[in-house]
Structures are given as C-alpha cells and as structure tokens.
Length: 219
Image 1: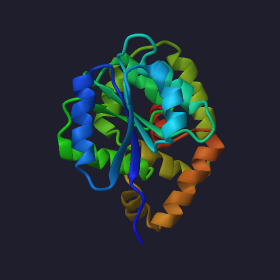
Image 2: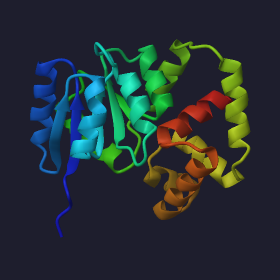
Image 3: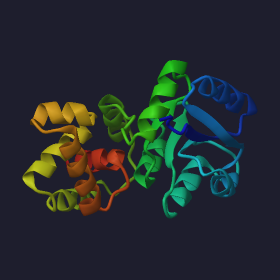
Image 4: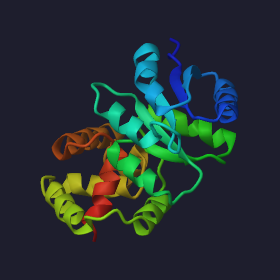
C-alpha cells in the first residue's frame, strides 16, 4: 500500500522564500506542495480549494498577518495543522500564534532536512516545539494577564487524573509518544489515548497547547 503524500500550503509574502521552501519540500517524496499564498487574506480560500494537511505560515506579512490567519483557520471545522515561520525565536507574535492553536514554529534558517522532518512530525500529530524554545518564549514574552492564565491553567489541569497529569507534564517537556511510554511504562497506543483524553478534557487543539498550559500552571 502507498501512503498519500502530506499536502502542504506555503504562506509567505516573499516570493523567493516561497520558492525556496517549495523546492526543499518538493524534494521529499512524501510531501506535495498543493498551493501558495502571499497574504493571510488568501489563506481561507486557498485552504478551501486545496485542503492541505499542513499550512506553513509566515507571521510577519502586510495586510492580514499570519497570526490573524492562524486564529481564523483554527476556528473552522477540521482545520489543517499550522506551523508558523519566524526570523526571531523570541517573537511575541509566535507565542500568540501557539496559543491560537498553531502546532509549532520554525525559524527561517532551519536546515532543509530539519524542515522536512518537522513537516512530517506535525502531520503525524507530533509537536515540533523544543522545551528550550518554549521556555525562552514564555520567559521573554509578556502579554499581560499572567496571574489569570496561571489560575486558569491550574484549574484545567485539576480536571485530569494523576496519570493524565503525568502525561501532560511529559508533553510539556517536549517528549514524543515513544519517550513518554518508555518513561511511564506504557504502550505508545496508551499514551496516544491519554493525550486524546487530555485534549478533550482541557478543550485544547494540540500538544503544543498542552505544553503551554503546563508552563502556565507553573511548578
């Protein structure tokens, strides 16, 4: 049996960047570039037309930026995964995009092989946000309401069973399903089931939002 290729939509206002990303990703046999967009306003119709699995989204664009486009996409039924692109790892907009439901982010100087690997991971439901970068973002970005976020995060985590909280913390540490299974002595299938229940109980979209909730809750 052959597996369907990962369908990717590239969104960036720089034509040269779009061309470079397309060339890199098209070289992978399991990734198909189904469309491109130069502005966030073009994203909804492009997604409706091409039905991508992953949207590679620039943050800083004139007109409708990547943050607004990400929020709009994640509010729709069965949205594609969104990976945001940025030049700076401590960009305040990146954290806002992650809270809006983006599956992670990449720096624009990412090595080609890592870019391909990241697209594969996010298409498979794995996070592509390292614990180090998560801590950097949260420690460097201040967008107000920290106390309220902490209280809300702790209230959300209180909904979980002890085992589910252990899995949530491991997700927050950037562990893969296989790593969590080995650490907590459970099968990968059981880890996936726990993650699914955590997402449902906490009303979150993806693993990155679980990680942010864990960090918001504090020690």
